[in-house]
Length: 367
Image 1 (cartoon, rainbow, N blue to C red):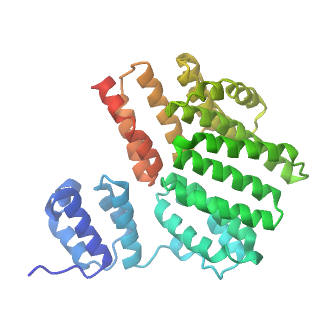
Image 2 (image 1 turned 90 degrees about the horizontal axis):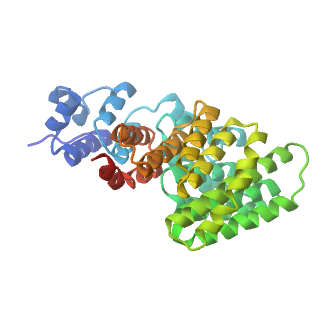
């Protein structure tokens, strides 16, 4: 009789090996590991698999979901890492919770997207009803929205952003009202591309709000950042409208690119500069200005420097679109595969889906 796994980790490892390889022996061969070693892990005979070993095991699975399942099972079955021990509880201090929310920018590049998402959901459900902790709730909500978009779960962000707006309005916090409207417009653009006019109306409402808002102190820089985000998203909404073959697409794009382009020389934040150039490049691709698009992508990458995985993938996808438009097939498959590897390594499901949407065109051009 087969000995059953004694841990959730063992059960998950066995299930994933069977799902992707048919059996444990084939999975072991893929990793160049002795099959008996996999059997030991499945049966829970190891004291505690180390993280480097978990990285090796995850590397044998093609799907980001499989990697995340194995990682979550490892956390559930064995002692968590110091980073996991730092995950706050709802009753912890606001300072601890806010620090954790900001940690997303460290945790996601480390491939921790799903575990951070789950922790943020738990905190959000606990904090949202408590008006005394509205600032922590709003920061957790913002982070939860952003990571839900990376995981291709924009409907989560849609619901959270709407509730964030109600909290911000109750607190009369103009900065968070603006942020909530922006997150909602982004959620609509990602969730309902066939209803892109709805996202456009939300963005227009936000633009009107920002024109009337006259903050002082640090609020001035926050307002400037939001105005820049509106300019960029206005172009991306036009780009999405074109992908949906909307009749209004060309008019949307036509009068929106120049204000974004004109804003670039005055920007001081390298991230804002890079993202502006990437959005401009998409618009230039749309109208067939391929040389201009190539220059914009190069300028954006140079300005941004050491970009996050998400922003690396934004530029890579635009680069692939440019190569497809110009029938440039050299290294096309290599760049495409590198993008998939990067998305999988960090659990960025949204970008994997965007890349997979290009596969048929890449097969046509590159063969």
